[in-house]
Figure (cartoon, one colour):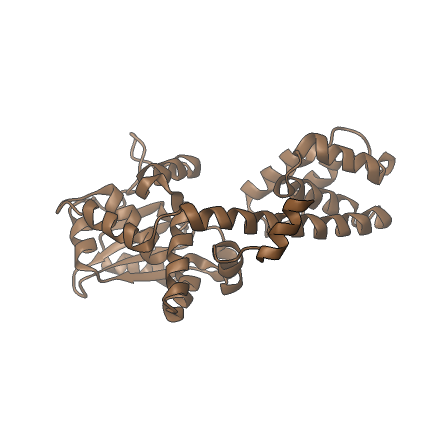
Length: 304
């Protein structure tokens, strides 16, 4: 069997992998061509990694992941070599993140700047930019989390929260009785690990901004001309366009994390574990821009 055939079979047997992820696996596997696995050497695979996935550690890790799946049962010696390569690439990727953090520390704006810009976006009426950036700054949402459908009925929203729904979506509801906007997020990157997220927003300015939108029942906030929900890629472009200074959601989260570390507000930082749907370990590893190489390591690298 070829790498692609092996991965197609693997995906067909896995019910716990998203369809989008399966499609990505198969796409990556097809880069290795039609050659049979039993005729592939480790050197051949290494050359394919370089020619098909480029030289960056992040890109090569995608290819190594596919090779690990494909060789685990049939090529134990190559599998062991790939495990070592995988470890080295992760270390190289981590070093790359630390190097980029040095640049981000010097170029990303401050948290106070974000807050000032957010206040400027409040026009007293619905502002898509205010709506997006308020949630990015205060709750650390990823792009996909914003694919929200408005719910008018409290009874229906309560039913959704109990998991008694046929269709999984992300919902937003203005609870006039408790004077808060509630978000129920079921479709997001790490939902299988962390489950549904239920968030309550009591900020008066945000609520005023949201109610000015005047959505009808079951109407998506971000929608196509025919009224349907937009694609994930389009939503990502939209969040990028409306984020403050086009910073994107990840950089806004990095700025927020830096501010909370600097002010030692670890209670608030811990709250992002739930509202973003991630672990504290991942936050500190991927979004803490204070995490850089020690100066002596940087100097050693420059001398080499």
